[in-house]
View 1: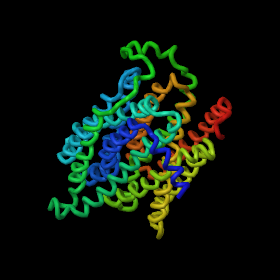
View 2: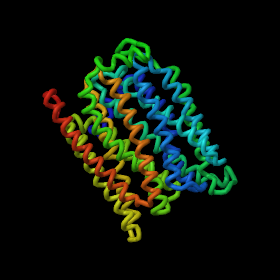
View 3: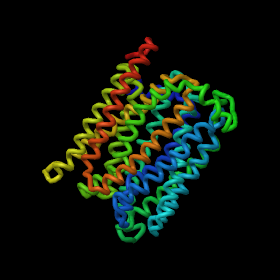
View 4: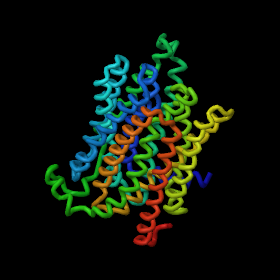
Length: 425
């Protein structure tokens, strides 16, 4: 009990502004999580093929990509509260457009909805880390970043359990065909985004770390104001891992649906269970980092996650063998927390590695890279599935990219520790 208290106690000392941001993220992420869990299955049920679904998904990442870098430049020296308010409105409205255009099968509107949702989500992601760095304190910085990352896992838990409950109650409440359930479930989840609209205007923040400037003025200072070589070294591992993640994470639900015929509400529960483990692992991250250092917290956890991903891919090869589905569930459940465990620590590491003057730009570039990579990955997935490539082959490509990215993180950690001898290795 004392150990649990020691792990959780620092979270109570997190500044109130960061806790409020966490509630905003949880509200918005819960809307997106419901779409993340079952939208692809809904699209399959109304008649779209895997390559078409990947095409729709790519518009979300394209919107994020187009929005992230200009936003990262623009927010330098500016208050971030208005951007969170924008995200709280854009994501639910985009979701409303998507579910209705899918029901009516109006493809241009489906693409538009995905594009707008990408812009809204990226606004929140680009601004979250700079907000934490501005309004957090040094003693609880690791906890503040981990809490922010935990919002996604908690959102998936909320969405997964909610989806299962709504599917159970659906015949009584809606009296509709079970095949149409995803439309009503996703529509209901849009209401979970409402609290963010009321929380965002009351967000209190400290003055920005740098002076505000016009967009073009900020753009002109890029060459001289930032340490580009250090920034690029920090971004390359992110790029590799992001491309790999984009080939797998958005389409795992299709993998389970196609290989094991796992329906949306069951996958929602599976995703929720994985996220419960993800929450516990994320809360443990600061303690693991302080006790064992960056090498264990990043390199070991991600290496284990890669092995579980390879195992998940192999279950497709042996899908006809008894117990293959059970093994797939086990590999999926344990891969999630190990990969998520490293995410807040890699963010903390790279932010400290590049230094304070580069942090806001790195946050924007990280978000841009993830969005651009997932856009490219969605297009690659669309092409590969169009050629009837198996899921396990795509998963193995992901594992290779992950492995190379983790290998490069080793050198960043080594350099960072050489320049910061007091940090635990």
